[in-house]
Length: 101
Length: 101
Length: 101
Length: 101
Image (cartoon, rainbow over all chains, first blue to last red; front, side):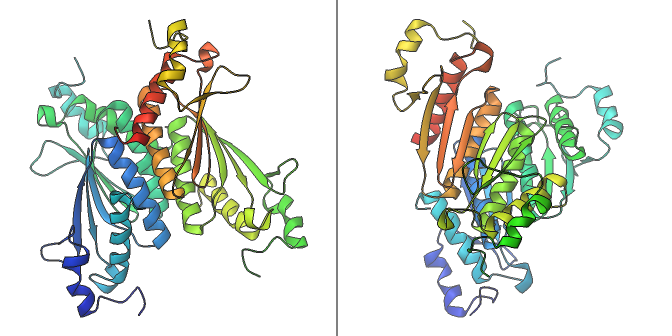
């Protein structure tokens, strides 16, 4: 199955266990996670790392930043909802914040 | 007058002439401008430059990015509305995009 | 021919015409170009864009920065010299600075 | 004493204790530290944070990057050697890497 496809039922069911820090966005087939950092410096360092990963994976977030808070929404416009690309990027973002990337 | 003060009437009247690319945000004393770039690469290069300027001025935007679009909202939480710091940052952001910074 | 291969004779001969802003590095099979920007802000915005492109191409520069000057050296450690990956990254970097990227 | 002044004797003597991860650069009144990260992503995230701090302090490093390695040299061109600005920036850089910033 290509990354461009939408999620299978089992992938969708795994969201709550494998991506428990992410929430479904109301009214959209999209997931969201909010990150609070120490200050703007740390928040933007994180954003630079996510930007590099997004460009590498050719899949980009909808995201916003206010001072030390970064909110990331992931969805795939071409399939009008979540795809495996969203899970791949979410996994990389999780790894950046938990220090394993 | 310190940068931390709110806008005077004359400064507020000058918004439409001096910052004509910015719009008032509905229901808030804040200004907003949307930027559309060629691609994510160019958009994030711009964001890195705005981040440096924000940190230098110790005044940070509320901003969001979706692929090649960046939307910036400027307001000053401590005065619950626009201040001269917003105008200073807006001026720097304008200079970055028009190539004079 | 894969991008990982070294340069053919004709590709090597084309360096002086197609990459005339780049110079051969003394004593190494590598090319170098120096960029002088208006200030650090502009220099680092450029670096952020090159970083994104490098990560996307999975080929990274040897580079240094002093205030508004950025010096980039390109070579491919795995072939102990120039490869087509260096030309691809040089082309992207040229496009960033000439405004076509 | 202003930050623009060179180091006093006691500040200079404190270098080996307070900045033990930094080394004197051969033949220059400058200090240097090399950082090795997991990969380019992590290295550039660090660089983005140092860039923000440098711009905020209006004092910029001489630095280079090769994949996951970043080398930073600090000196103050206007005093032709080390100044308190170098110590301030070194302290911030240390805090970024040890997680306290």
